[in-house]
Image (tube, each protein chain N blue to C red):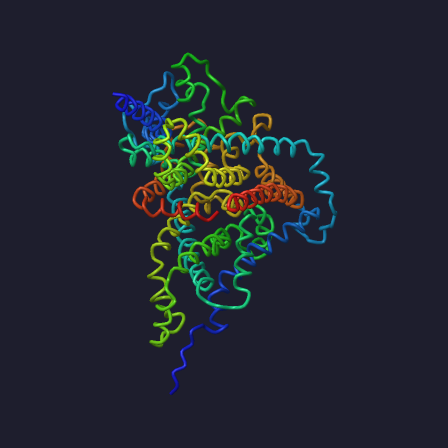
Length: 299
Length: 273
């Protein structure tokens, strides 16, 4: 008997290991992505759902209708507000709490970290329900807190100017612990020698923060900022539970609009074109992320 | 002197922030045991006069929350177990098997991570509809069976397993499946535990997809049921808080118990880039 040790499995074994994952991804992810793209060029609606003969190819008509749909522009504007105001605020808050917990003087850091992180693991729908009551104009805790400082009550979810800020506040509370942990890891990776050298040069705490901490944290901040934005583009459960997109569509988001068109009114072709607008926006942000990361690695 | 002052400021700020962060969750728990009407009365009270479990009883007796709880459990456990198996097979193969086009295929999968799941939902629903899987557990589970991120994380971990170990097992005559079950899976235990927690929590908290697939209320998962109840029982603050506690508590307890693994998972995700 010859000792022929195979060091590599045969092609059939490889296929055996890969096929469960790849076939599921192909059938239930890649094919749907392509079909969604095709659907966005059709008028697939409730009649086509019953009988495919009613399905027609309509070219770019869905996209044209989107451009003329004031609700779409409203949803886009609201989503941008949530992403470009709520996103940076979330990141800033995470950074501040990371600095707070990273200060070597502070005691019980483990306990504080646990408390700050707890909202991250909670169920979004459940905490959105809780916050809906916290925002109650008369019985809500938030207004009574404002009352302590002599401020007049706000109709958080009933006033179009306050509804989106209220959702942003909930999002900050829910998410800051996650990015905080990533920032803490980033802070701990900054070599101590840098600070020592700065102290020898006579740099104060503020100078050290400005000239060492911030530049050293730049890659982490970039990662955190862009992933947060990508997540925030997908805003859905908060307005669905708290405001149903109101008042006066002030919290209508792109995904909520897609859900309403696709699964409430069954205008599936139109909803698919909204889904692709979402994809395009996320794609652009991801592209920026990759480009900037490459730039940083080179410099 | 200055050091002490700084310390006091740090403690004060951290404590106030901790109180503010904990308040919504603590109030949820307290309001859930208040007698009906007490959580929406003026002036606002934080502590219940009398503790009652009547709202929990109502949830179980009249609103079938036990059923929703089991639905959530069923879906989350199935997705966690099946996806760990499927992703680890593929992750291991991508790390250790040599075959033509491997790296190209893997890069293609990674590139697809930018596609948001919402894009797939409309055609996926139509597919499930023709397959008769709308309003079934399988319908909710199917898109969760394999995940690119899961394959990626397991591959990164499996890369660190020395080839010599695998070759030694082959020389001893072990087949590839046997190597996977008796060598690779045990070695990958840390990553599998972390991934299991992430998958379970992610599925438990998931909302949009079960909302779309589960059309009959006996099939709702907890978040879907809670969102639906929150629409009907707007005035019943205490009842809704009890429902929120029931939804949040399992994941919160799981997190507290397995914190170490969870935090490690976040760090892995952040290295991903």
